[in-house]
Amino acid sequence: MSPRLPTLPVNLPGMLALGAYRPDVYMQLAALADNMLRTSHPESTLIPSEREMIATYVSSLNRCNYCATIHGAVAAAHICNANTESTGQDPETLKTKAEETVNTICIRRDIAAEETEASPKLKRLLKIASQVRDSGLNITPEAVADAKESGATDMDIHDTVLIAALFCMFNRYVDGLTGAMPDDVEKLKGGGQMIADRGYAARTEAMKVD
Image (cartoon, rainbow, N blue to C red; front, side, top):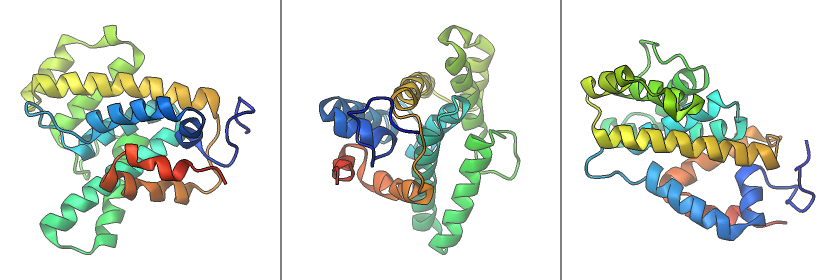
């Protein structure tokens, strides 16, 4: 499927095309994404991999394949980085395990799967994220209480709601104007490690139009 605006770059996928078209807007969105997905507030217990998993989960619910794919890859890269540093295990083995964790919880949305590494706190925050995806008014007191009982702070709940709302916007922005996945999905996933290491504002190099 071609971009819905003929002036969008045809050789760049998703947000990269939109960023090349409106770099001024992209840099503001990237700063917000870096703030919410990479920067932990002192009162929040959410680490970058969990924040990316919330983004991936909401994108999957919204059927935005581009966002679910790239943010799933970033989440897996964060998990792999953390486990490589803490365990010293083979990076390729850890990468495979991290990707399976993200796919199970966020893409297949089997948040109850016992074999995954998702904490009870994250699973309950994903429930809140799914409620936000339908409507902010759908968040129930029970969901908030369950999350707090599992160790979530007020800031964790705040950030979960904001990330979920933010990605509903991102998903509709990407699908509404670009409308298609790139042919080379593995190349798209390959950007996950770079984003995990350097952030979203650093992606401008990938937006150069050939």
